[in-house]
Length: 487
Image 1 (cartoon, one colour):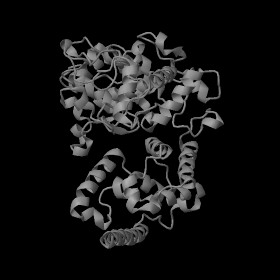
Image 2 (tube, helix red, strand yellow):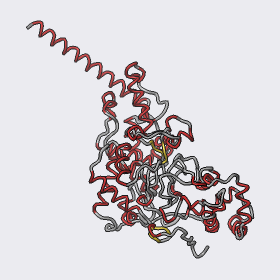
Image 3 (cartoon, helix red, strand yellow):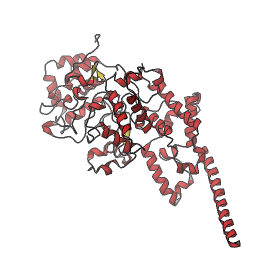
Image 4 (spheres, helix red, strand yellow):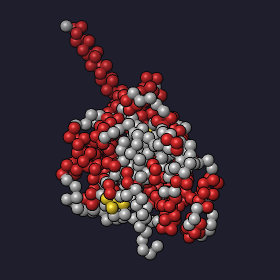
């Protein structure tokens, strides 16, 4: 009995020592966290903005920078042998999921984070996914209480309302992750009219059989509805064709973002041997120069008779700026027409946000403003038994940074019901499949309910808009450009 009592006392003593050691470590770490936390410059406009300041204070308390920025000054336990292995994995995953440095820089400069950055923050705060439990064990002060969570979410909505709300959106939707497509964007109509002619000119291809519209059909949602593109001589390209509609709203062009703008994108297919297959721009320019009518159009558009790669692609880019599709039923809903979408479609939009789809698919185009890893929350390629190709490398082929492997530009979901088959390899043949796979591999929800799939698909179908006032399903392949009368 005495021996048992001694053992119990010994165990209790060890537990007490452990608690004391843990408490001391936690106290030290709290001091370390606060001492090294990111600061605002004295001149930062955020200091004069109560909403932004409250969000910054909450984010600073959490120390998001530890796991979501590179080269942070980490706590001592990150260098301990066993802990280092665990923490290294967390650091890799943290930086793989989200880069916090641009958000911190925006707060320090008093500027807005990007649409996607705001949406990602909203997603994890709404789902209460951050900070993770293992981190809170050693940093309990970093637990976000309800006020701090509300402060961050209020800031997200305020930033959207201030910087990203579309003119005409209803007051109650100004802070939503998705905004209506504007009725117009700034366009040089003389260049656009010239660009339309070039967009449909098969003489830009190597054998005179293809034009831009061959892959980007105005009557097919801006795509070709094929698994991967068909180029000159019937050759098959390696990747699914993105829609040309609303591409003006994308941060870059192509799945891997290798073109910085529409003009650079227009140049790519013309010279690609698997696509339009021309050999050099001098030959293309000579075709354009010798075609009746072009010389006058170039003179009117550019103020000179210069016909070369820059003026040809510049004109095509200007035309593509006109390919916007406002006035979808969902846009009408965001503008205040509560009856524009059904109860199921409204429910689908709410589930779209709750599951985390809007963390990537946000903004005017419901995508196109960020790069994300395919397989962020699960082994996409491994589970699908897909043989990897160069097209699966994503941004890696552009940046050559290993962290960009399988990272793609988030696709634009506008008019998505018309743009199948879907995904970068064209492997998804129904919207239901897309929703299931993206929930499984890009969100923590994994296997969502059949009703959720049906509701989200119903919502996605509300995103189909109009071009030149014509429902996109009815737009003809050769739809003329309707420039304003003053032009």
